[in-house]
Each structure stands twice: as structure tokens, then as C-alpha cells.
Amino acid sequence: MTLTGDDVSEVLVALADPTRRLLLDELATHGEATATTLAERLPVTRQAIVKHLAVLTHARLVTCRKQGREVRYKVRPEPLGATAAWLTKVAHEWDDRLATIKRIAETT
Amino acid sequence: MVPDQIEREILIEAPVAKVWAAVTKAEHVGTWFGNAGATVELRPGGDFSCTWRDGENLVTVHGLVEKVDEPHLFSFRWARPPGTRPTVENTTLVEFRLRGEGAATRLKVVESGFRGLPKSDEDKLTQATQNTEGWRRELAKLADYAPTLR
Image (cartoon, rainbow over all chains, first blue to last red; front, side, top):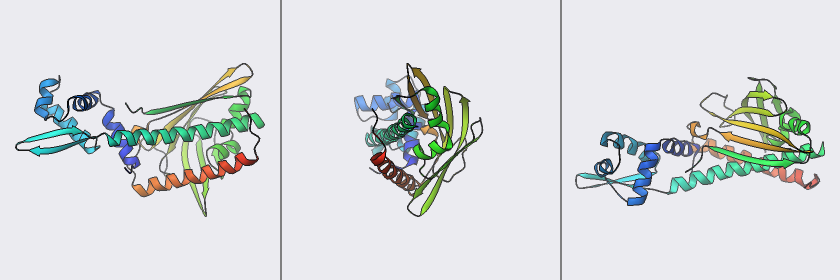
């Protein structure tokens, strides 16, 4: 998938909150669920869960679909992989820069 | 979980003072962080800017020095995308720590704050990527005639 700085920032913001990480874990472990069933399983109010799910959906870490009167949420793993890949690229750039600093310090 | 910081380190066969110079002197910063010159005002709040030549274009990344504790700690913030002025919102923090190990120096770098990066459109990110590519080409050229030291 294509990734912009915007996406990276949104994914990192989404992951910064412990409740949202808990929600992701729950959805990843037990599969699709509604805000109501999540509220039954976790020590978080349904109202808070709906708010956190909106942030996760915005970062495209979670998708939802309507089934009758229910909205069911599930995990979308792709942005996690793409964000990790972006950070790996940044890390490689530092390896290159450190190698250059080493060359400068050892030859001057 | 995806981290919000990147840590890297390297062992350099040179005394701490030489590594400090390589990390902080403008003439060297213009090599490892830019390829067409740099400005470094070595004091907290000082200018830290680097220029890349990308084909016909010159692109400057702007930053600000945060901490200077010679010869053990140097940190600065730099703004993404290139060309923008640094603020708290659009910058990441880069921190260098130097530690003597016998006659050698352990150099550690930590870049943090990706979570706060600005809303940027795809064009800007593409531009940043192209600059990086240009810089990699320069590095490869440099590596051709620089002696390889291990």
C-alpha cells in the first residue's frame, strides 16, 4: 500500500493510547465484534469504545460494516506493516549517516 | 507495537573529540546530513540547516539546535517536509550521545517524535524520498574513493 507521512502520523497517534491498543488486541484475538460486545468484555464504557473505534477507523487500522442494526468492527493489519516498513527505512537512513560520520572521524 | 523512536549506534575508531567534530561541525554535517552545505550554530536555539542538491534543485531542511554538552551530547530538531520552518509540531528530535571506549568512541543516535509529524500530502513525501535517493547516490560516489576502514 502507499503510505504518506500523514498516514504514519495517524497510525502512531492511534497506537499511542493504551485503550486503543487493548481494542486492537481484542479484535485481533477474537475477530469481528460490535462496540456493545467489546464493552461487555473490556473494562471500558461503550461510549468510550465508540470514540476510540472512530480514531482507529480514521487511521485505517480498523474497518466496519453494517449488519442489520449492528456495526461490526474488524482489524486491518496493512497500515501496521506499512508504518513499520517506513520506520525501518528511517532507521536505514541513520545507518548510512552513522557510517559517513565514522568515515569522517576516522580519516580526518 | 510500532515504536515512536529509532535508535542506532556505531563504534568509531577515533577519539571522542574527533567524533564530536564530525557530528557538529558544519563542514561535516554538510556531508552526512546534506550534500550541498550546512549551517550549524552550536548553541541551544541556534540554526541547524542542511542543503541537498537534487538535480537542478537545491532543497534546504531547517532545524534548531536543542542541547550542546560537549563532547557527550548534541541534539537538534529538524522539520519535515523540507523547506518548512521548524515548529514543535512539524519536527522530530535527533539526539547524539558520545561515549569513549578505550581509544574508540561509541556513537548513539536516537530520533523520536514521528507521532507528531505534520499532515503532509503525497507530493511532499515523494519530494522527501527523492532527496533521500539523491543523497544516497552522493554517498555511493563518496564511498568509491574514500578508504574503507573497519
